[in-house]
Length: 74
Image: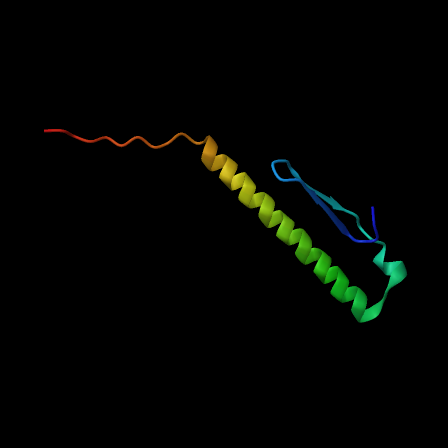
């Protein structure tokens, strides 16, 4: 893996692979820079959580049976 925190791999028609490497920020940086980086890391994790929540919701919706409609015919 490279020095980047995230590594992405995608081939059309296949899965998307996201690798996350947690850097040791405390030994490399400090002060305000560290605060910004930690905030950015948190935001990326929240974005990933949102993607997963959306995928779960779509999976749940696909698994639920379609509602039947009753129509009275005279």
